[in-house]
Structures are given as C-alpha cells and as structure tokens.
Amino acid sequence: MADHASQPLDASLQAEYYHLQKTIEDFDGRALTIKAWSVTFGLASLVGAFASKGQPVFLIASLGALMFWLLEAFWKNFQLGYRERVDQIEGHFRGDSQLTSAHQISANSFTIWVRRHLVPRR
Image (cartoon, rainbow, N blue to C red):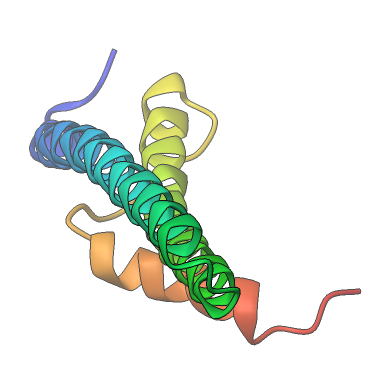
C-alpha cells in the first residue's frame, strides 16, 4: 500500500502516463498520414513518368519515396523516446523501480536521444 507522501507523485505520474499514451497514439495517426502522402506522391510520379515517357521522373519518384521514408524514421524515433518514458512509469507502478519526480518528458527524451546517438556502443 502506498504511503501518503507518494500519492501526489503517483497522481502526477498517472497524468503524465495518460498524456504520453495520447501523444504516442497521435504519432501513429500522423505516421499514417505521412504514409498516405508517400503513396500519393509515388503514384502521381509514376503516372507522370509513364505519361511523359521520361526516365528522370522515376529518379524524382525514388528520391521522394526516400524522403518520406526518412521523415517516418525520424517520426518513429521521437515516438520511441516517449515509449521509453511510458515503460519507466509502468515500472514505477509495478514496483520494479522508484521514480522520484514526474513531468520529465523532455529531459527523458533528451537523455534517450543522447544515449542512442552520441554514446558509443560497445
């Protein structure tokens, strides 16, 4: 049973958890939009290439697809930063770990980004 001192922290962590879950769902919705744009752009480029019988249009379509793929990869990377914070909060409520403060979305995401991109892997 939780003591009275942890109740405000737990309430804050619960609010943060629900906010993160909503944000992750929003990321998924936007990722579907990006995919729809990619398909539309790709099909329009292919139709243009066949209509004009121009091979450079295929190159443009390929570059466009690559750009959409990169955009989605960056988008997923942001989403994974939020996902790790959700895992930390779930661990707190399971009793696996004890968080000492709530409302650490930005600090946590930055720490994860640094660990993934700047810390050498062993």
